Length: 68
Image (cartoon, rainbow, N blue to C red; front, side):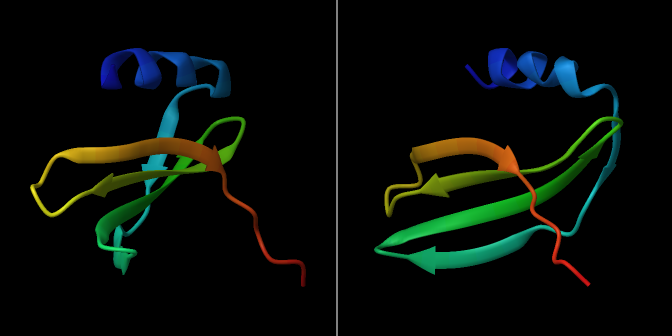
């Protein structure tokens, strides 16, 4: 499933850079968020794992940049 999700990102062009990952805890889950810079868009991926270490959630969303 991860491969299918990754391949679907081809619409944004080639991956140009990956940012620093961030670890957080929320509602009993550990989440890792990773910024992804593509040719046509800036996105971020987040993977959440439960206490057992099993993946509980995965998504990719647009990365909003702050307005100056």
